[in-house]
Length: 155
Image (cartoon, rainbow, N blue to C red; front, side, top):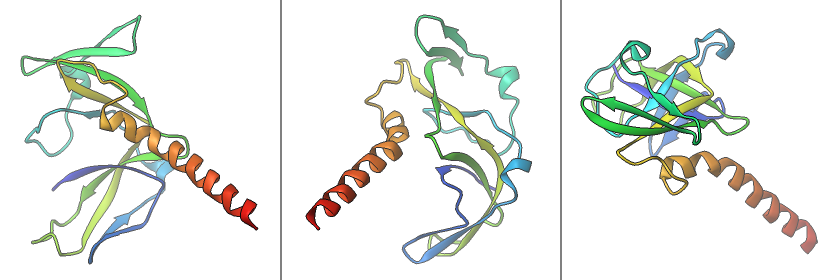
C-alpha cells in the first residue's frame, strides 16, 4: 500500500494522460486530522507512525523555524498553512496497479490544514519550491482576475 499527500480543492476524479485516479471521498468532516511532515528523504515505511513520540521539534521564538534531529541529521523546518479554500488530503492506494498506465483507486484516510516542511541543515526559505507552491493558488487567482478584467475592457 502507498500513501499520497495531495493538496487540492476536493476532487473525485483526476486524470493524467490515459490513466485515471479515482478518489473515494467520504465526508471530510468525518475523517481524522493528520500531522503531516514533508521530509527531505525517503523513509521506507508505509503506514502510521508514532511521530509525536519520536519526532519532537523545538521552535525558536524569534523565527518561525523548527529544528529536529532525524537519524542523526539536523533538520530545519517551517510550518506551512494550506492556501485558503484548499484542504490537504492524505490518500492511501487501495490496489496498486501493475503499471503506470493502469487506473488506480485511492481512499481518503485523513486531512490537514497545515504541514511542516523540512530541509536538511538549512531552514526553508521563500525560494523553496514547496513554499512557492503554497502561494501558487493565490497568484493564479490574481492572474486570472487580471486576464478576465482585461477581456472585459476589450469589449
